[in-house]
Image (cartoon, rainbow, N blue to C red; front, side, top):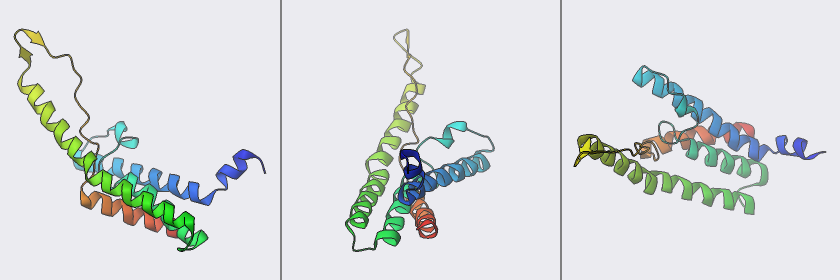
Amino acid sequence: MNGFEALIGNTLLISAVTGWFVAQVLKTLIHAWVTKSFDPERLVGSGGMPSSHASTVCAMATTSGRLYGVGSPVFAVTSIVAIIVMHDAMGVRLETGKQAKLLNQILDSFKTLEGKKFTEEKLKEFVGHTPLQVLMGAILGILIGWFMG
């Protein structure tokens, strides 16, 4: 078996990628439905419903549990990584997005300062997730991992 065949035959990797892909597509569709406009950045961007971070790591952890058992080192590592990623998405990354939104509002209110125009680009506001977005991503990932494992 060559390297490419081994790569696409890696169920753990494929379930994680599938978790990410399905979440990104759902996120894009939900965003388009809510805003009534299509934003192609949502296909690859972070933030939004459901969390693709949570979906990816939960699909990976669930698949590893199904393939190698919940007592395996692989399941232990993937579970800890999943917990860290989801905690970070709801913590630091969510706060970063809130700060970016506030800074963008401040920059908008000061179009010019002493005759100088701001040339800075707007900060990215979609970087973190609410607990509900993470929960929905986790459920999606668990379902994908269960069926792929």
